[in-house]
Image (cartoon, rainbow, N blue to C red; front, side, top):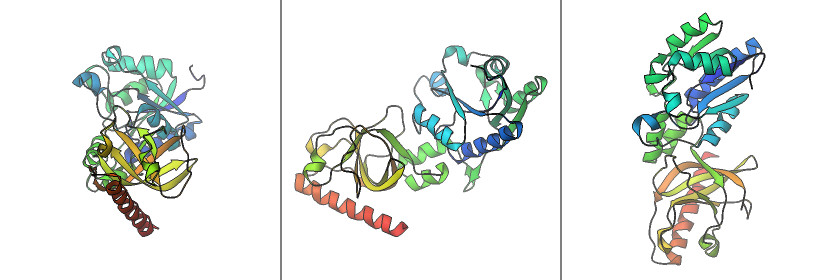
Length: 299
């Protein structure tokens, strides 16, 4: 439904909603306030490169989490458009006229300096600004953010996550990388050996760090609880579907059915196969001790 008074729009894909995206949202929010407009973040359900490359792009987070992060960053509303062949073949000026102005009643638009859109990615920030000026729409082009001598980008963060460099990814994200989902039932092995876990299936289409053990935090009811997590297939007892298992160092005993985020703070060791339960329990005890030392050091 078109807002009769118009909206301000921050447009981009916003994978991960990193520090560069937060800069764009903050700048757009300030401009929206000055104009008395709500701020809408405009993105897509799937990455535009999926169609161009013929394969899914591994993302930092799923679409629903991206929407939540955009809201947390300051957007009053989030619109995730489907991206299919029709959208990909839409000329850049038609996208502005039909979608930004016609559908959304955009009165102000904010984009990154490298924003590209329309058929063949022919539209860019400069063309957007010129076209909007002709329609009485103000346009704000926000410079890219640089950190440690390079641009803060989703592709840079994905590379850190895939390599297991969690602290480097967190520096660019402005928060630790996380995996979210609903806690389900596992095989009960952790509980049997005195280290019960909250079990999450690994989301499809999301880039994952290497299988192994991580110092982590589990966010539940607005609190982040110190924890240790394992990502992998639990090979000691017969490999199963990949999952994220998190043992909270001190917290609620039961989380079944709850929506949680698990923040991955530091890689401890690769996933291993143990000869028996006692070997696994000994390793878990060592992992828990390492996690406690980590949290004591950062207190």
